[in-house]
Length: 144
Image 1 (spheres, rainbow, N blue to C red):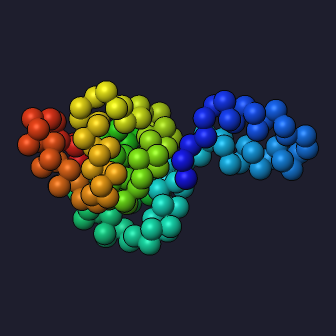
Image 2 (image 1 turned 45 degrees about the horizontal axis):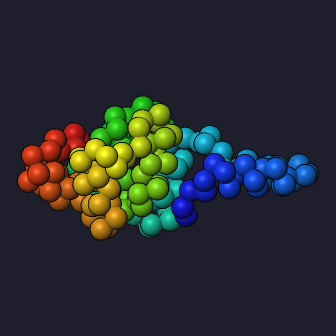
């Protein structure tokens, strides 16, 4: 699901006339939400287990459980990216997860972010592989 532009959302918003339409619009396009709900939804959608996520992301078991339960609400940017890679999240889903924790989106003009985004687009689902690629290009690996 790709993100609508602000202009297209504004046009949709101008045409809303009743409460039912308004609630649907807000639910669909609001930035509100929690990281743990979003990640648990992705896990269910992609049918990924917690042990698989732990293995792919390289993040400790306790840390993953704390994020997925909502006990830890402010993980680092690299940890969010690593979890998204482990989940096989898309570029837009990864940016959504980063947005939920008020971290900057993957930035196309930053070489490290661009290489991470390309790995995501290539469906690389293992942080170790991404880190090897980053190190080969003399870039800082994801801190997991």
